[in-house]
Image (tube, rainbow, N blue to C red; front, top):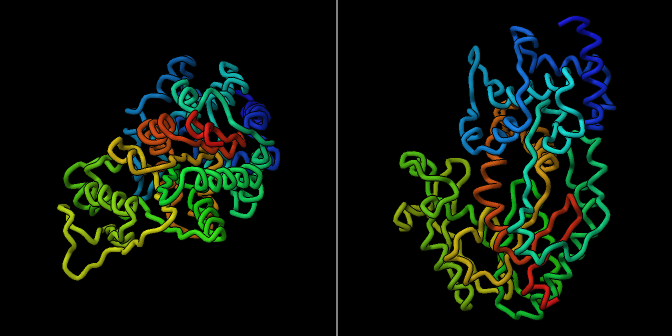
Length: 389
């Protein structure tokens, strides 16, 4: 490849159009980051793919299932080859001119800190839009646009950017409690780092301020032991991964105003207080949940299963775009919690974000009552909820 500096200066300028955050980098910083993706045998060996083939690959679940979260080289975790393939292919297409910056921006996110491309996901499919009455109920200015220049997003900035839509959402929940009556179970689904835990905490405080009794159930507490799941090849989002009968019983008890006891899941050893048959283990204890006016059930998939829908009075999906969630996770999981090896973190996010979208979040959007999309600052409601409002 001739005139290497000129070629990569041109790539750098094109990438500034793909992600405005690169405007804050100097060229030599860009070249430092390129060292992690440069092919050992040179860029001439990287072949562009036809656009259609590349997009089909980026929408194929098997492509993501083949991503290894802990591939090793010389004893160290490295970027998975599928992650590298997408990134190298897009860089090479930009270099050759086969891919325009507009086309890349339409179909891919670029994360500066991880220095890789992430395929974009369409969460609001035709079926989802049909379920949510054809369009947003209300929309605000897209304050998250400022995050394009950020490499990590703290809670304060995130809360400030979403204050309008969050305030309206809280008002709507208050009105629905008044209209529907209590006890009311509200399911809040959403991807990791979308902001659902924070909004549930704010909802709880607001509702308590109205003189209501509030309680919360976290879906994760119903997981069976990870060792058991892995030994039996149990999918983490299937009914078999949960103490499902205990979950149904708990929701039924609370809906009928009765005390209930739920399992307790320990995250250090990733074990449950209950065995695979739902019996309390010796020396363990569950969690007592008292009746309440409003009960939140929060997690990745609180109303994914049809059997649970009869218990949940209001079904909410709280969303933030995948690139924004990734920036939040950089700040939370790497900067503060120092939770993961960096390449493991990237590989895991790349693998799971698409699979969970198609298997978990989009199906729940297809039967939810309310969707809150903070990135687009759009609040959607289904016909039944619109009738109440």
